[in-house]
Length: 169
Image (cartoon, rainbow, N blue to C red; front, side, top):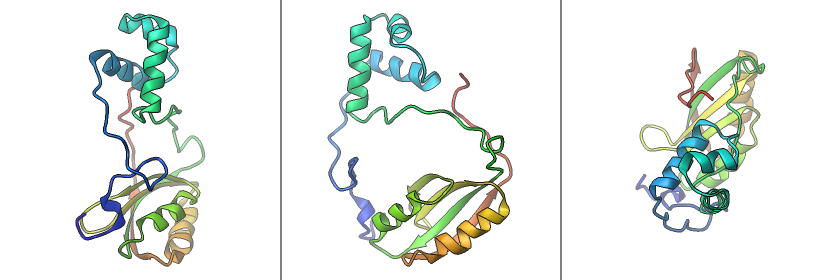
């Protein structure tokens, strides 16, 4: 977005500092990333064996990938419906210019918020939420989102079916 919003600059973990330039990854680093992407619970020993390096080398490489921000974390893939979050929606938001950071902080506190992105196009923010039902979704949109002063408008796109593209472990 080249319209002067504060989202134009790359951000660091704190949201205010510039990220260092990415360090080039070699084939072993890329193999480690693929293994951990497929199975985030893989042991250091298993990773080391699969990429043909020592455990110490694998441990050091994984820590460097974490420290460099290449690996952002490890987590579980959730079946939201089975976890009691049967209503999912993408919500688009138009916001007041130069308020991205403020809006992002509000959105991070929303129950069920799963993904937040500053985007270009007809709207400014794309938000993915999971709620127990449509009543909770309506409450989230009409009460929580539309009460944020910097939010000019919203549009809700109900998700009828999802397919997780992450590898099955």
